[in-house]
Length: 121
Image: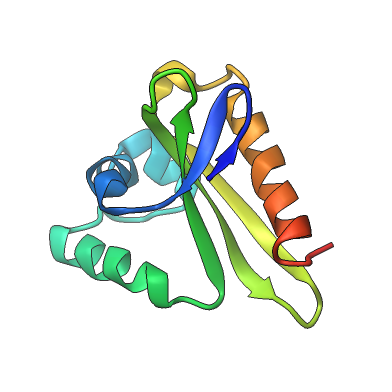
């Protein structure tokens, strides 16, 4: 777990699956995520079960420090150890926590993880 003053990052797990699917199918978030169509149950289950096998991505749930509320997800994709780089993607799905610093802190935490644990630059 990676912890800040507002949010902590935890590996995406079974308890985060339902909200992740709901956010993936929210029309506003779909547009921001570049999704053209909703995610079905089978598709989501297959994607979720494949996460731990991926070598090119690391996924975290964003939870509030105060009450462990799952408010979004942040992930590193296109991990490239040779060139020591990756792309960060983030989604604050809980509208009550948008524009309140949670995303900024999540980006800082995952960047620190990328630099210190994955040796990215």
